Image 1 (cartoon, rainbow, N blue to C red):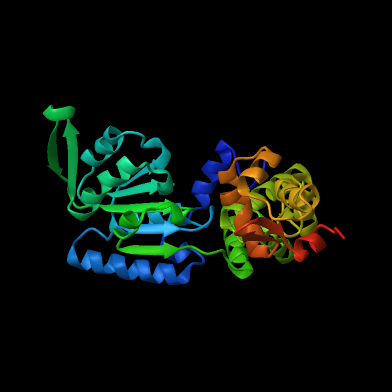
Image 2 (image 1 turned 90 degrees about the vertical axis):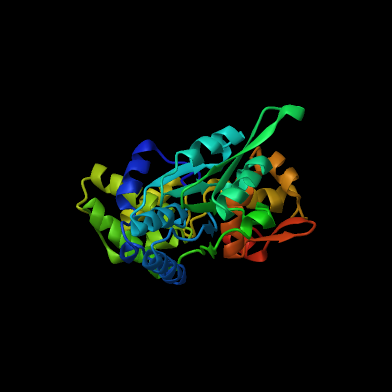
Length: 326
């Protein structure tokens, strides 16, 4: 299983343990934290719910963590729902009607909300009003229910798929960018302390380099390295431990996995590095186009290994050099 795409139930439990409990423990995204703290302090001073917030950016950068920190900072309960699970208006109505004053509603993958659900959110966000249509045809009638003050936080990896009317209703929209190696290193050191295992500085650097600038992946690599160290009876994680873990996982020095390399090789060899359309590439790889766009492409583009042109995807010369293809 790709470490970038999936993880186990134990991983989810440990991820919750490693998740920061306050803004002071949250490493990175400094400007976003500063803006959020001002928004939240102002809301508390006015004794109001915080503005609706939108977090967007690649997976694993801390959008869910920020939502939970906002709720903790406001002393509020957080209700979490994934956008794809809201299939009917009744699903959203049941959630909104159960909201208590000051609650935080967190909708993950909000770009996958259908248009009917999205339009139902408009009056709820602006007027704190839930509008339900009862009946059908000429006998249908609209019933309005007042909602208590609440904060909607939405997260997405595909902000371009959100409609303008929905985006405009958020009081704050924040783009989470990839982390620096130093920030990833600080996160790895903090996580190793929480897991109760020592780690050498050169091992921290190796994990950071292979983590795709992403805290979630850095923590998973740390956990797999810890497993290797424990099985082999080592007292701490060394650079050699991390390298052997990466070799077992099929991850190279820049964090590329077999699926990343397969994508680049398909473009370079199968299509002679001519521009390839997304649908054609997805069919050639037997992969979902959403996975290509959300999991593989952002990092490959960040590395300068992939270009998205109007005519299709093209691998760069840097990608050829990394893969040692003449």
